[in-house]
Image (cartoon, rainbow, N blue to C red; front, side, top):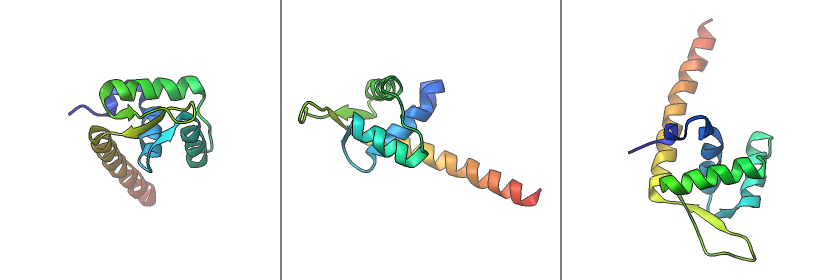
Length: 104
């Protein structure tokens, strides 16, 4: 199974989109709001929709039927698995970093 690292330098926006969609389907504007609440920074449309396109290409998310001229997206099973794997990897990095800070 490929992971978010396959997305290279685009992995952070993709990760944030997946985290946003883990709460349920959302359209782009709602994802921007959610990500801004999480990070304090609102992704621009180019960054957001570029990440959405790459995630769709990898099969991590899928578009749903348009609602009120907005296209919602949701996680696929592959996307949920990739997100879980990446968050576990990050947990290991964070816990190691915090442990090392406490020692120094």
